[in-house]
Length: 446
Image (cartoon, rainbow, N blue to C red; front, side):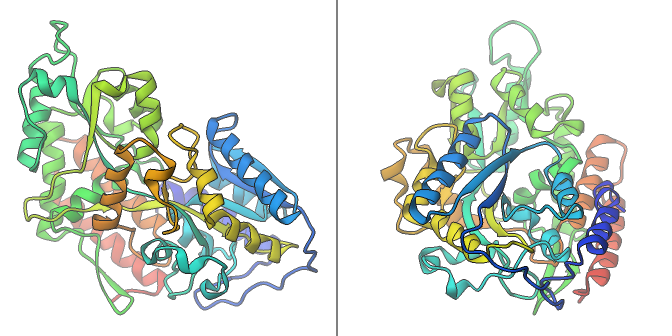
């Protein structure tokens, strides 16, 4: 059992016992709604650092929602241990009305009955939201349990000044990418006369499943996968030849080429960002939300953003993520919940959330097709992420609860790259066994 599951399952049981929410989806029955008050104020939680520009944007969104509807709305920004605090709130019968959080949390929230089902057809403006974005709200039973709010993909941030100094072009293949990483590691690209630079920045910690998150796009681009799926039934594919080859390729960067910045196996994203902007490594797969930060701390002229190269078989893939508006169970103002979601996906709501070219954005890529990216943001780099999302974006598998799979995958891949004497196939075979058992437990095994 993963650390995350050990941390959350007892609380989940406590939640169910104390507030009797039952299961809102996947075969369960929705909890009885309390007496409704269409004027009741909304409590909104968002997973952002308190005091950050993103918190200010969320408050601006809520303020304009109040102006438009007359419904009071209060925003609380929480970043560290957000999911744990949410479950503690549930156990105390103090769930917020709205949660703005990662799409990856969907399965866990549905499993615990903490969110309400959403009738997509009843959401005003829902027909203007891209089908791909709605995919991120779909539970294993095919029903929607949120309203999509923000989308994102990932691309490579590369030190342009370093690349030009070592005389390399932009990488178009994995081999060229590895060669560039080697050059950044061995050719003193910062010119200080010391061997103190590396190629890759990898947030390879197991916390929140970061290692699996990082590996996903490469796995798919190389023809590997976590599962095969047919008619809603899944079978492990994580130990298949292409999957093993991908993890072996990743391991080689750690153990053979030694092009990965030190500390990667325990590094979270908050620790990885300074490695890139501080000139310790020059290739970083990350999201568009970091551009404003790196522009400020590193300089926009120092780096470039390009799509990750296609895999050896010519496939391109990027993990698609984003944030949903979750309508939490037990709200006294369900009508207000839906009105907030409808405002959040409207053109005015999306525009506020995008926050121009600033680092206050809580909408990375707009999900509303009526919102033109170039009319809100002048920075053309955003279009790269939009193109990657629309052509190569792929959400996490639609199993009932992705969290234990992601955590188990992160722990297995992390163990492989952390031990240069490890047997990749053996580790992934064990991971496949773990996946098979979890698929059975979740009732979706092929």
